[in-house]
Length: 139
Image 1 (cartoon, one colour):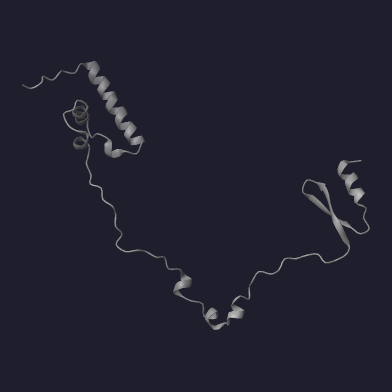
Image 2 (tube, helix red, strand yellow):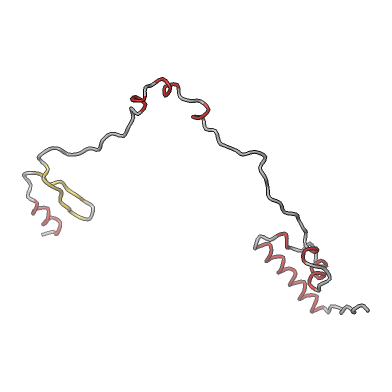
């Protein structure tokens, strides 16, 4: 014997249609468009267990994508080697190496005074460092 189906009242129909709308909205927001139902009737069939979720929702076979060939980016330097690089000796290839840093080798500057935070001032041989200390404090 078949089980008798119960008729939907207007209140049940309104509640179920709202549930259908909310379910589809939630699936779209969570980026699960494949789990959205195409119509209210399909949702009702799923809701009351007449069909399974996999058969009521669009089923798609998933497979792993296999690239046709591996790709390696070829830069212009690889494609066209430099003519000068080939002609120069190994000593001259590094002719543009980083220069050594500058350093002070004189005798006039005796030190550096700190005026305020990152305001460094050079102190000369004839200058009094105490003058810079009082300037900083405003005395």
